[in-house]
Length: 199
Image 1 (cartoon, rainbow, N blue to C red):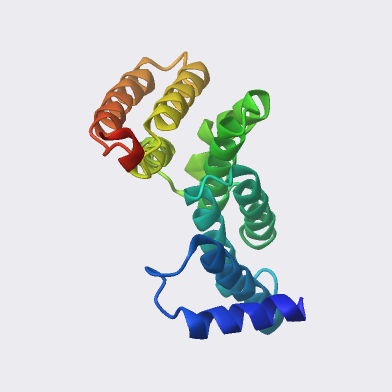
Image 2: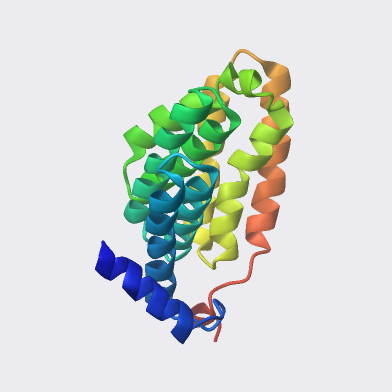
């Protein structure tokens, strides 16, 4: 652990600008930040949760979905200890974890989590249905923005299918999900292709 912290400090001095920092260095720096926050503020502090979330997002952006899932799960456990199982923070983590699982090819596990996130428990956290739809279908759009359009399309379709199942007896919700899904697909289709695909 000491070596990781020292490595993180070295990387901060070597590459103080995250834009020019190599991917591996950014991950090491973020891991060091998580450890430093845990030691200084505690494992469930807001500072540690934020540091871990930033690490998870960076891993997700690099396509390291398994490693990102582990960080999101650790954050979920921390958020549930602090805020309870039906908090807004828990909803966000469940959506991210299910996305990771789906992109890892673990569809059955992803189904269980995304359906849990999309049920009515979000109302206890004060999240309106429109916000839920926007965030749930925003994750595939993030994937598309990284140039992974095929993965984004598959994830958006998967999320929409699960929403259809959860809300199959609610025509108003189904209509709203359909509209949000179509908007998300338009955004995904308009995303830039990776440079390697453009010739």
